[in-house]
Each structure stands twice: as structure tokens, then as C-alpha cells.
Length: 143
Picture 1 (cartoon, helix red, strand yellow):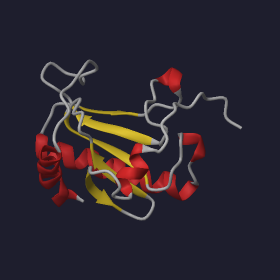
Picture 2 (tube, one colour):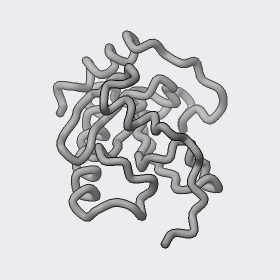
Picture 3 (tube, rainbow, N blue to C red):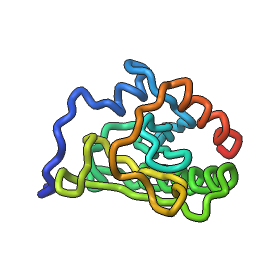
Picture 4 (cartoon, rainbow, N blue to C red):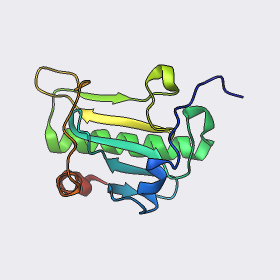
């Protein structure tokens, strides 16, 4: 039993994206994990590595999902490095409301750093699907 306070968010946005209920850019998908291009770009080529099964936090993952996520996390970092050639790549993951988890579905963020370093933590413009599709098109050859 986990002591984490999980954010509310049902129906789950990520599950809806993966099931095609709501439009979103899916860069790459395998049976246990997928890579999405977020519409809130907080860095260069900001993607999300998610489980395909609904799992609220890292504590809810099965062993095979852990391996699948790590495989796609490493591919995402390599793709961003090859395409964007940023001097840094940020990887972060939040579990529970107190850790600033906003969507109750396990995911890693991966983003190339912005000019001056780091990533954007304030308000960012929400991109259109066509814009995130273009980011996916640039990264897809590395998957």
C-alpha cells in the first residue's frame, strides 16, 4: 500500500491519448510503453515516456514495464541528442501531488535544455497537434 497522494484526473488523459479518444502525438508505441510529444514544450523536443497500461505511479509498475520504459527513455534521450544537439538533456519523473505530479499515470519527462540551461517551469504556450507532429517526425527515425 502506497502513502502517496495521487492527483485526481479521471478519465485519465494519457489513457485517452493512447486509446485515440483524444488527439495527441504518439511518437512511438510498443506493447508496454510509448513515447508521446507533449503539447507543453518545457524544453527542446519535450517528450513523455509512459506505460501503455494505466499505472498511477512508479510504485504500480510491473517489472517488464520498468524495463520497457527504461528502453524508451534511453531511446528518447538518444533521439533528442542526435536531432537537437543540446548541451544538456533533462529527465524527470514525479510521484504524488506533493512531488507535483499532475496526471495520475506514470510518466517520465525528457527534454533538451533551453538557451541558458534547464527547462521552462513557468507558463508555456500549448502547441497544436500539427506542431507536435513535426517534432515527432524529426525524432521518429531514431526509434
